[in-house]
Image (cartoon, rainbow, N blue to C red; front, side, top):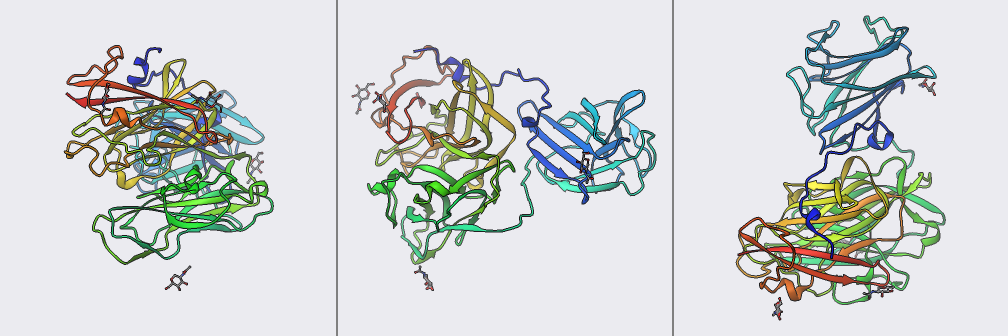
Length: 509
Ligand SMILES: *[C@@H]1O[C@H](CO)[C@@H](O)[C@H](O)[C@H]1NC(C)=O
Ligand SMILES: *[C@@H]1O[C@H](CO)[C@@H](O)[C@H](O)[C@H]1NC(C)=O
Ligand SMILES: *[C@@H]1O[C@H](CO)[C@@H](O)[C@H](O)[C@H]1NC(C)=O
Ligand SMILES: *[C@@H]1O[C@H](CO)[C@@H](O)[C@H](O)[C@H]1NC(C)=O
């Protein structure tokens, strides 16, 4: 077996240079009503950079800024253009409604400045962190963006050619106004939640026939009881599941084979809208497909008589987008009745699974249960880590949601993905106490869709529930006072995909 050491050092090699191509800028808004001023952007949390591309229908000067209140005073502004003597660009700061002053420290880098068909296109980059006290501090809160432009390269009062728009740059939720609002409703109906701590309800259903292919572009949760609905997943079923049903999940029935994730929502999640060039395909050829809605109820107070009708709305359109979206399940999942026990008092517990897909990823949803503290989805090429596909060092079970990547991450054939979950079980004494369903999953949202739905590993419980240690990895995890055990198993489910997994766990010595 080859060295596993690279997988254990989940730091990012800072190899990527400044990028100006569109995959690095998946987000776009028009800043004005007339669609003359367009802003595209993207960011890379790991390198800490944010890239903007401002396109304005003018051959004069253009400017963009971030403002504390929507006005000029106190704004961090860049001004640029392509004039008779070439391009000009500067980082400025406005002290009032007057020409912004040049910053002593030029924090923005101009990547390109061109004019074409009457438009000026200015691409520039800044670190997300402010470099000096004149730079606006970019957070994942809505920010008032301002713009202005002139008709010539002589920078003077902009008159009415100005405006402001509030945008959450780092946590952007696309909001398009759509011509129709058709949706498919996937909800349970009048489920009586039993007085048990954890209950999974599964409803297998068929959607109304859509004769032609459509695209799902938005997923909206419809939650009746926020205090007990913990997560919901919608899966497509293989063709041999051809019957509706409404019963507890995972009781050893055929429906358990419906594992192609279509939509996901978990506590704290919100509406999710797909990128404008992609949607989940539905209808047409697969109109006979059955779907399984799984609702996980968390009822720690063992309340009785709770009746629930929660579910998901899948908004769809017949205006097909360029790409079909696929959602791939990666990570480690307890399967059927296999109990997956986390060693007690194990503050660090790492799990790695390695699928080998080929895709453009734009969003990720990380999922563990209560004991999860960190989830990291590392991306490797040629045995070197090149990026994270998902990263949450402060994983909070209560605020799980589909997270848009700041840029579109390309996973090439042969790349490897490691899903790592760190659990904290220091408050637990018994083996697997209330954690028999602990899981470590990353749902990768990508396009174009490929047939592979799932690349999961499942734990070998024989080893997991065994606290003896087989240390046969060369110094793999060396941080004392942990020791290491390795568990390898092969999963081969005909309708899924051949995959293999390697798993480590650290046991308190
Ligand atoms: C802006 O310019 C582009 C390129 O010339 C053109 O296609 C577009 O229609 C213009 N937009 C408006 C609102 O005039
Ligand atoms: C659910 O309960 C409501 C209120 O009792 C009732 O009106 C409705 O018909 C029920 N729906 C189903 C599908 O049983
Ligand atoms: C624990 O693991 C060892 C090998 O590491 C094996 O010999 C033993 O049978 C295991 N015990 C149980 C109860 O599975
Ligand atoms: C997995 O399935 C493939 C084809 O379905 C087969 O060739 C291969 O031998 C299987 N591997 C294992 C370990 O069962």
